[in-house]
Image (tube, rainbow over the protein chains, first blue to last red):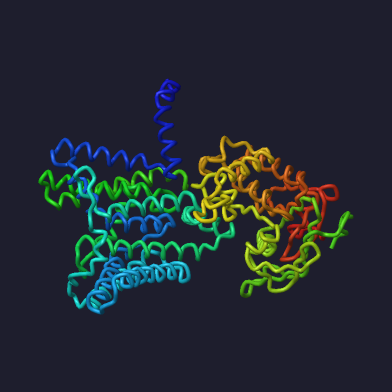
Length: 334
Length: 258
C-alpha cells in the first residue's frame, strides 16, 4: 500500500520539488491557500474575479507588499522589524515636505527620503549587532521615534499636491481593458530582484545562514555583524521605496499613514511560510502571503462582511501559519 | 616531563609557554604544544585541565596572554578564527557547527562561495551552484562519506553524516592542520565508528589532525601520540605503545607522576 501511495504522489512530489528548487523554499502551502481563497470568493461574489477588482487588490497590497520584502530579509536573519510602517511614514513626510514646503526638486527629495529610511535601518542594525539588543526592542524604540518625528516634522498636517514625479508610479497602463498601476509593476519587479538576490547570490546565502546558525556562520569567517547591518539598511531602502509608492497612491503626505503596517507586513511574511525563527523561507512566499490578506479583505467586503471579521480572520490565519511552522520545524530544531 | 618519543622531523605547529587567564582563574599556566607533520595527536585531560582553552588558542578563538605560537617555523598571531583558517588551520567544533537548513554544498562552501565567470558572476554576482555541488560531491566521495545528494539539507542527515559534512569541510579547506574538538561527543555507537574511520582517512591524505576526545579507546586506536593536559600545562606526551590506557589516565588525574 505504501508503494502505491508513493507512486500516486510521485508527480505531485516532483512538482513540489521543482517549486522548491525555483523559489528556494517550499511555497506550495501559501500558494495553495491563496488559490483556495480565490476559488472561494469567486463562488461567493460575481465581481471578485473581474479584472478591475483583481487590479484593485494588487494596488491595495502594494505598500504592505513592498514593506514585507524588507521584513522578510530581517525575519530570515531571525530578527523582526516593528518600525517599518513608521519609517515608511517618515520617508513619506520627508519627501513631500521637502518638495512642497522647502522647494527641493522632486528627485533629490525622493532620494533624501529614501536615505532617511536607510538611516533608520542603519540605526536598527547597529543596535542589534553592536549593543546586542533584541531586534524586537530596538525596532519598538525606532517605531516610536519615527512616529514622533513624523508628527513633529509634519506639524500634524497633511501635505497636499506633491510634485508629479512623486506620483509617477500611481499612473496606469491597460492590459485587456484593466488598468494596472506602475506601482504594482515595481512591486513585482522588487520581488523578482530579491528572489534573485536571496537564491542566487552569496549575500542571500549568508542571510539564510546567519538566521539559521549565527555561530556557525561567524566561525565560517563571515562578518555577521556587517551582514546584519547591511540587511537592516537594505530593508530601510525598501521602506523608502514603499513610501514613494504610498505617495503615488494617496497623492499626499499623510502623518497618520502606516501605523499598523508593521503588523500587516509581519502577517504577510508569516502567511508566506517564512519561519519566525529565521533561516527558512522564501520572498516569493511573502508575495503570496500579502496577496492572501488582500484577497480576504477584498472578498469579505464584496460579501458584505464587516471589517471587524476581516481582522478576526487575519488573526486566525496568522496563528494557523505560525503553528504549522512550529510543528514542522520542532523536530529539526530539537 | 617524560621523555618524548623520537620524532622524524621538526614540529609543523608548536606553541611555547602559553598562558591564558580569565580574571583570577588561570586556565593555561605555561602550556607547550607540538604537532608533527602527518600525525594524529590526541589531546586529553580532565575537565578544567585546560584542553579546551588550549584548542581555542590554537584555533584563534581565544588570544593568549603570554606565549608564542609557531606554524611552519614562523611566529603566528591569530586574532580571530578567520586568521587561523587563512593560515590553513580548520576546526571541527563539537556542536556540529553547520547551518542545518542549508544544503550540504552550501555548508561546505559557506563563506567561500564560488561565483560564476563572466558578466553573470561579475555584474550579477551569481553563484556557481553547479561547480559548488560538483566540488562538494568530490570532497565527500574522497572521504567516502555516503549521502544521497549534496542538495540535501543538512538537517535531513543523520548525526554521523552531519559530522561527516563538517569533517569533509575541514579536510577540504585545511591546508596544514585539522583540529577536531570532541567530534564524536554527540554521536551514537555506529556513527562514532564512521567518524573514527573518517579521521583515519584524513590522516591518510597526509593532513595532521589534532583530536580532542574523552573517549580513551578511540584515542588509543587513532592517535600516534597523546598530549596529556593537567592543571593548565602539558603533563606528558605518551604513545599508545609506551603507555596503557590506565597509565595515561593516571597521569591525567595526577595519580601517577608523568
